[in-house]
Length: 101
Image (tube, rainbow, N blue to C red):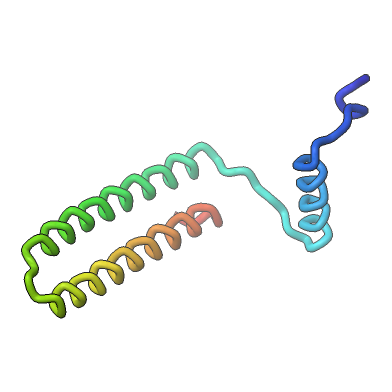
């Protein structure tokens, strides 16, 4: 039996269906270049470090807080910063995937 004749797993069958749906919809998948992979890894590492830095600063601030209202405000700011950094990271990765710098 050749590889083509071998029974396919449910995952392989599902992936074939998705590829066919994408092709029917006119979507093409272009593999990432080595440069794009390196750029994406660099962006992820940078933002992972920024998020970790922000986490440490937030924990330090929260330990010093005694006012519950001020703590709630600090928590909201921290969540906004995390969301902003995550959005920036995702936008940069998307630009790299589309071929922009």
